[in-house]
Image 1 (cartoon, one colour):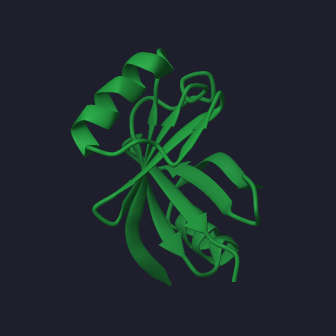
Image 2 (image 1 turned 135 degrees about the vertical axis):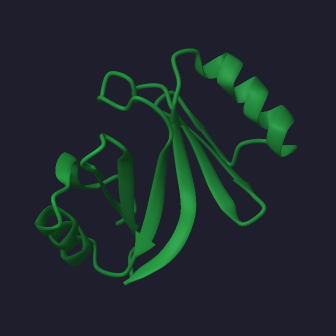
Length: 115
């Protein structure tokens, strides 16, 4: 089951410029500010900046659907014709993410927080 879109990750080439832009846009400082990821929480959304995103094949922002069973949702998407971009991986503290491309090349992310 999907709980909705609550996270969007932007691939960025210049993390400092992107951080300045998103800090101005969202009006808050990042809650996470690491060389590999900058994260914001604003208006019930998580907004992330991924300085390695382009190297990982991300061509634009990726919306992440929060799900209760990432393996089940991934299998359903693959059965419906999606193509795996990134298989399920733990990105820290038990948070699992995966991403696929639909038939038109649009990116769809899945995110499962630990129970």
